[in-house]
Image 1 (cartoon, rainbow, N blue to C red):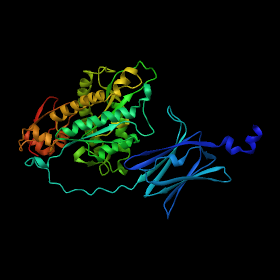
Image 2 (cartoon, rainbow, N blue to C red):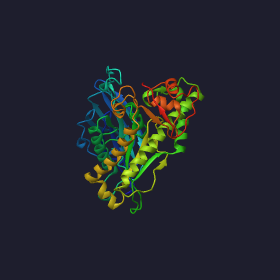
Image 3 (spheres, one colour):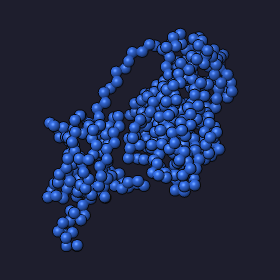
Image 4 (tube, rainbow, N blue to C red):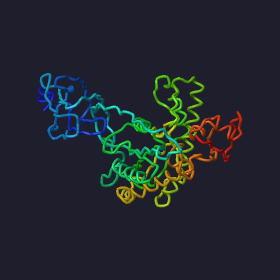
Length: 440
């Protein structure tokens, strides 16, 4: 055996490509090559016709490329051949549209071994801004809806936690997300949008970036817990911890010079042209208001879920999850239960239970925005009783509020807010104080 391996080292020691999987997302296609070990690779493109060439050193193909479903991908044909006397593997992708390729290796995890990932980013046409009527309280038809970004965790080659019977977290949470979207879509004044509406992977930072591009008023990320002890159970609701907020503030301030990101929600305030002190003040105000709203929504949802589900803790929990770190978008993370617990897994894969969980989240969102709707929204107009002169007529100061933030969120100038409340140039306000909001 040793002699035969010495004479045919490729077959004895080559890294094997055991499988090829394809995941289709709206903006890219992902190819995942499952490997028996680490492999060095080289990627380049060819024109006329457009092709992508992937060379893998010391590798051999054991998978049938013809069996891979390429119907919804930008690839028309995937073929292979050998190089360097059979020592290396070459995979060629014939393209039917223009893409930008990006490749990287992944180390083994709980579900998979070594992998080589090839992402093919499609050319997405830029949206042409539509001319819309200027929002006016005198014309409710021009008032905007409240946008809720709904984020189903994991997806694609990342299944998340896996429970009894191979029930996957990524499947369960997408079911809850779609139920929540359906509930919000039926409620006038809300516009729900999913960060993913299929079985594909989105990075953590990309999830919050998508919410920002949506101009979301709120971001809710839906997950299901997993633990090595199957007795662990209970749902939970999470908001950003003070430490997580502090680290994110540092990250934003460090990159403000080179960032096109904006803060302040509808106000769209850029940090890049502000000095360090002003940038820090603006970011602090925005994060304080956002975290305050996040806690209120999370507490309401926690109460709603507690009426039918076992809760992991008696209170809303805090952590530094990346998906909670948008400075100006109230963000929460809902763990719908432990999918590794047989009892909770059985519930979570049930459509009826997914709908019940979505209803609890929906009720919390609706209660918050019905009480505290953003300015120039249909809900704000409705809250004022259809009175075009005042939207809203008053505001009760809450923990974390500042006069500047209240003015921004209600679409009025700081000067007008001071004047109508007789504050002159003083910005001292107290929790529980009721402020009059002038017509915007």
